[in-house]
Length: 380
Image 1 (spheres, rainbow, N blue to C red):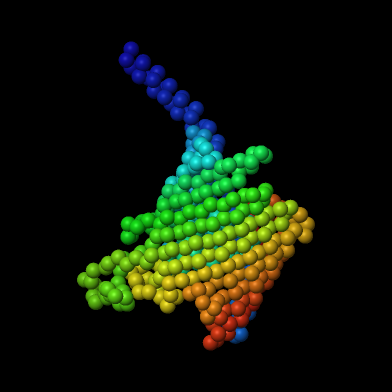
Image 2 (image 1 turned 120 degrees about the vertical axis):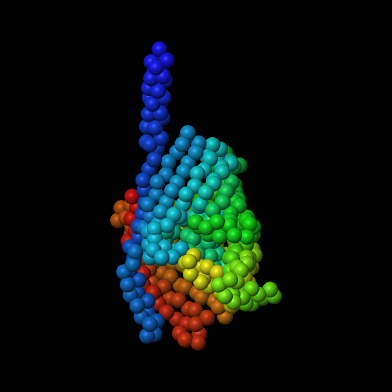
């Protein structure tokens, strides 16, 4: 009798598990995208041209119990010996989405800083993110963080609220607490980064926002500069933690209307930077805590327009992109970009771009260069 009851209970459990498994699996989706690239650079006697795999990503996402959304994304590009290597996990998070006005995300995901940071590279519109976004939002961060694709590990709350008569939300907020060390790395100095922003949406398609960032980036290692140097004398030398405070803010505006895109963002940073960006966790850059010559301030701005020639199909685009690595004109690098893109299908886009670059920090050599970039992006 007991044996029969045990078998019946086991069969019921298996049946229930199977019934639950099917809906869960049905909500899992595989997607991804890739960008193939040809780039030619013209600069005095340093001309170059090359085909390149700019990026390839594969992601799985789905829902659990309706209110929980999860995503895991892996990126392929570059080589396999460094922290900017391939493959690497770029996203791994779960988000509770029960309410539009209050959602909570936990894991590794985009820093809530600037409009452009969370955009898909294909949808962003140009051959790369704005210089100031790359330097201050966690890509190739000026502080010396390894390449982190604008992401970090932490927890974030966000939401939309204050609906108008048409049911459209007028306000959005997002705020998170992060390690401050970039992707796939634990916290070192136990000081977390607080990053957040909000924007108002007064008319459909328009966003006017502001963002803030305060925290630190740290390394454990050796240095010879500063008031309290910690030089490496021999293998027995003890590594210490050196942290660099980082304080940033940004102002952003965007207007999307009738397939036109207008977007501009300004960002400013206060905080020192390490002399060398972290590339490999196993080489000397991981323990090199000397400061660089960039100073403790940086700023930049970009402004772009993407205009339809054939709506939802063929576009012309122009961007002004300026960045000052130490917030002075002596280090100003400006890009003037013009281009076209054509949607071969909703999942296949070809784009071409010409950029004239003027780099004041290279005045001793050759400050001017030109770039032609052609890309083919696809989604699945």
